[in-house]
Length: 386
Image 1: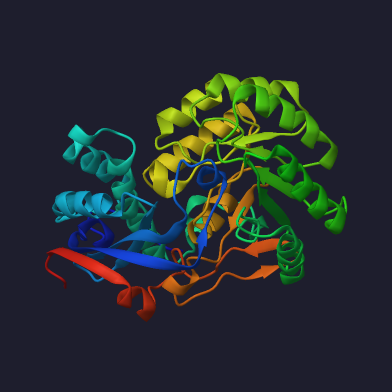
Image 2: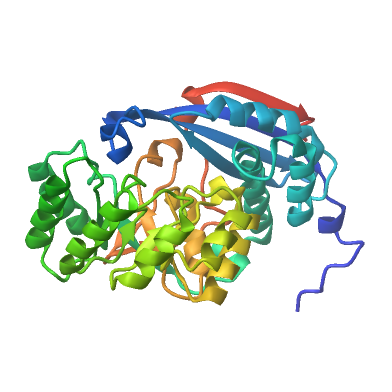
């Protein structure tokens, strides 16, 4: 029988000795357009700014964490992470919640949401990765896993820049690869074109394949009411972000009016914001993004609130992290399959039978690839590496 840890055990004596943060820019093979581009609010996305945190303790235990920014914010996240990283040196890496609070107060003037907590998120994930690796457990097992695989759906083949014929090809290829569901982008100025795209893919796939749509916040309330009513016929898993992300009352009205579930939450950047969304009953599917809310520590707070409210879960992006967090949620979630980040890591997630398998390697089960190092533009280190 293993003896319980005491204050004299080595794990209690270990301390963070070295931290490295790096800013890596992942180029996308093709510029990505969703409804925000077609309505003139944003430009096509050509790269993703990744923030990596690597932490090592005096006894040689290591952890890797990540956060990210799309279109803007990468330099700011890196600058903030670089500024607050010294606050971790000498600390016990097991005190993750306390360290989250310490880092938050270290940058208190920038607030408790947005870019500031997104920088903290990379450290928070790294600390959880370190703790799970030290325990010899996958992150999901450390947190208390409910399942060894999760339902997954594909988004990257359904963007609005994709011609309708190619949409069908992409959807079929995803299903044949073993992905469980398909999400299509909608929300363009031509509502008839949105309807045609969904109708075409639904007809091709048949009624048995799970299908979702995502308007990326581009409808006003009357348009959302009209489109949700029309989309009822397609037996969708959900309609995502039909309204502005902070229009909690509008989303709540849609959720109450229609049989098709409403999904939202990916753009919120704190547990408190998600708490307001839940209080308004503004979603049937909650879609928190762990890096955006500040890491695993606040994500678990969001998930606890969602569970109490009886909501379903569909974490946004970063499948390499969310496959673990989805495995922990009590009811079956959907995890978003994006292969965009795969070049950054030496490992790959396994997909089969419509499900994403939870890695059995310790921690996140990830290591940075040589390609990620080559795409790195800035690095900052603090402390002394053992």
